[in-house]
Length: 423
Ligand SMILES: Cc1cc2nc3c(=O)[nH]c(=O)nc-3n(C[C@H](O)[C@H](O)[C@H](O)COP(=O)(O)OP(=O)(O)OC[C@H]3O[C@@H](n4cnc5c(N)ncnc54)[C@H](O)[C@@H]3O)c2cc1C
Image (cartoon, rainbow, N blue to C red; front, side, top):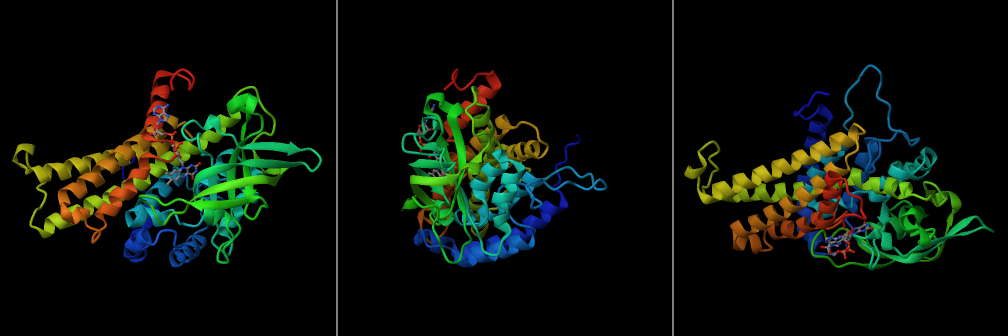
């Protein structure tokens, strides 16, 4: 297959449109929503929902044709698929505007990504159609619990089948659920969302007993009990969700309802992250690009131009630092592109997905920190967004597998070790 470094037309068009959204709708509100944590950016949500609806709906998965199957490309146009590549570019562009507000983008988020990875065609059709409905709608994914984050095999949430009613009864408490409030709490302006809850149907079976369940908004016994106060992405709601005797229809279990002797079901569910890790990496890159561009602007205002093409020893220290950061950023972006290209072409990409996430986590935290440092008091002051980008960038290295965990995934893939061999 030929390697193409020029972005396809739909990607260039998306970049152009989203740059305007980022400049006009996100940047002007960035500081406000940082300072007014948990206030919901309704104007942005409603605008983005209408815009995305006009373009055919949204979720963290390549476009659906409404029945859960990916759009078949017509025989005539045998173009290579670019679904994930397009999403990565879109997320990078929106995160350049404001990564916290990007998290308030209506649509399925991680919840829909899980349904897309593990659900049957019928489940996809049933659960994903709502994101193109009249009102903006959210979904979220809940794995993390106190004591079960990196090691998600330790989750204690239980799902027990009530054979009389043929319903699953779920009990447990999930923490740090991105979009958990908007997916579950009833707001007049929002459609009915859902959360995908990970629970064990057989604790003695370890990972083989873990399953994901779609829990519809408004299910009795389920509520968002706490909103986290955070260092960065403060406009994004991060909720704790409690489930007490929550009853879920039998068919809302994603994947097989029987406990297999192996962890095939669990692994398939984990494949959600192979699709979404490069996308998280892309969001961090958007934040770092924002910081780096701002630095260059401020340097230019002070008469410092970067003299590309000069031998390194003739450059000033600042010029070298800026060029080094640009190299880091571009190499991180290329790793994202490789990982999403593999996802688009249905090639197993667990290694590349984790690599791109590790690289982006490192690079984006380093760049935003360096920008604050070089700008000195301007970087530290709340007058500008540099200090906010520094705070916002750190999450890239935490959620969807910390830097350490993704390094382990990379090492296991390269060395051929299992999770048991190398942990
Ligand atoms: C803002 C935010 C949003 C989030 N959104 C979601 C969400 O939508 N859904 C969801 O389910 N979760 C979400 N999370 C949870 C997130 O995925 C976890 O915080 C993350 O996986 C780490 O788990 P933990 O918090 O339990 O940390 P721990 O697992 O306790 O880790 C603590 C530290 O130990 C290190 N560590 C752990 N194990 C190892 C090891 N084997 N080797 C080396 N180092 C190790 C970790 O890297 C980390 O540095 C979110 C978290 C945050 C902060």
